[in-house]
Amino acid sequence: EVQLLESGGGLVQPGGSLRLSCEASGITFHAYAAGWVRQAPGKGLEWVSSISGSAISTYYADSVRGRFIISRDKSKNTLYLQMNSLRAEDTAVYYCAKDLYYDSSTIFDYWGQGTLVTVSS
Amino acid sequence: EIVLTQSPATLSLSPGERATLSCRASQSISSYLAWYQQTPGQAPRLLIYSASNRATGIPARFSGSGSGTDFTLTISSLEPEDFAVYYCQQRSNWPSCSFGQGTKLEIK
Image 1 (spheres, rainbow over the protein chains, first blue to last red):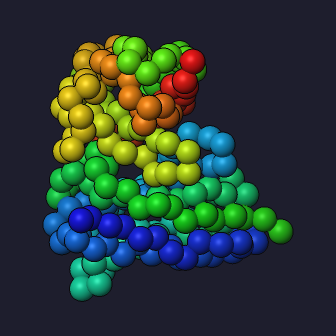
Image 2: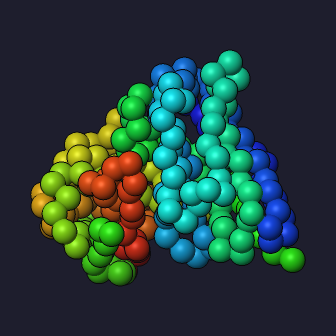
Image 3: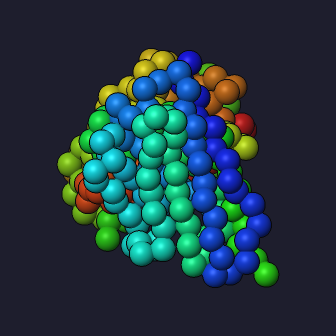
């Protein structure tokens, strides 16, 4: 059974940093692209970032480009999202998601349960 | 920027009825459309990709159709567990993608 488990969320002040992790089990995670999708409280879904299975290619939404960095560790079957210069509008539940394919397609067939990031002073 | 508009915002139906949800794109997206289901407090679940392909493990009562700018998700006979929020997602402007605002399917 495929499982994705996020961690690293919490309360951070504006301008601060946070690193999210997503550990996969039941799957060879690096055989697929993966991504992060967020959902602000009571709102819809917003794609944040994706990374290819090889980790060579990374992609970002305009709203986070230059502030967030996506990466993955093949040996740990883990996906990361380094979030810097955080703003109040980054407050959301962040979902880790597995892509259907090795090269990023943004078709996400498995999702974690999410981790809440709150940016507030 | 490609905008997806879902209608209706809320759909009230009874178990056993047929549900038809709409997603319209602001410009042609070919068949680069997916549908997701989200129940309260849960992560989204992929139902349909490439407009009409059912994801693994998705019951046959879910079907998707459309191409270009107009797409439909149909649930042939509603089960109690189908009452949820449904999102469409386009990936025509890959590597970016965007979601619609959602349709809430509620029990009448």
